[in-house]
Image (cartoon, rainbow, N blue to C red; front, side, top):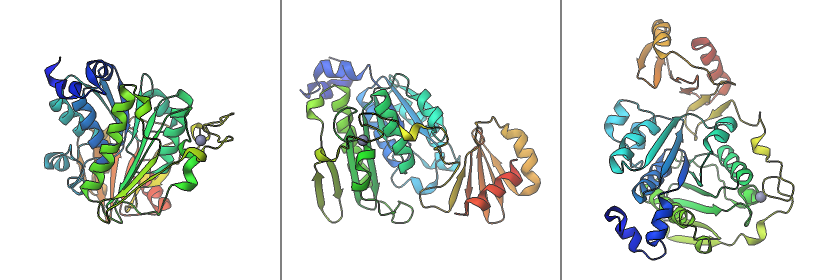
Length: 338
Ligand SMILES: [Zn+2]
């Protein structure tokens, strides 16, 4: 028995055989915010073979209250979340291969990242990306685990391709009140609870104990003490374009991805160029110096210009803070970046 994983191996539904399976599995975690950090830590400690982490943001002081992998130093240095996460995960378990991708996962990137992946963990903050994950999971027959939280509320659901309804079947049944953690706040127990539900399901999938998978959507509120499980068996749509008899995978069609997106209810617009470009941040720093205060690290550049703060990544993507107006954000991008 491997001492490191002995307590997990003593748990009979996993056992030595289950642990051996876990050691061969690769997991894609989309998003490295609170849920992504929680899942990544749990699965790294559990001893999976490989974790592929994707996130488009950098560590901010407002993240530290609940995003368990990050430190004040990460926020001071404005490290991309996946870079800070990889540093910490390597300290936790050096046996696990961590691949970190600073990017906004679009269709093309997703189809590359999915290679060799056994399970996808949803740790995103938006339905566009979840529906992309859903189509990807159906097309490549990979299980995925939906999870979301806001305030003291959380929700999770496990989707096995070819078995039960998919996210697209359930869209009109999932409560979406438009609240986000930036408008309604969030407390860490809500995060920990969703992470616990998601990673328990993940372990079942990784040891291939499909009979134990929870078939129901679970929702809870840790403040008002509600806990509900909803059966979804009848929700499967025969003509669903994602999981039905003749799937077209609408969210994998090129052009479906948005080029601008207002981020998670914040005063922030993300701009994504139509094609990935390589930006020399050092050159760009020199060019932008006359326009305002510029800070740069190896991963991103920050320009403070009037009431706007523009953060540019090496792949040409930018976050424009201080506006919700996509037209205004685009015009700032063109003015400063090109
Ligand atoms: Zn479906």
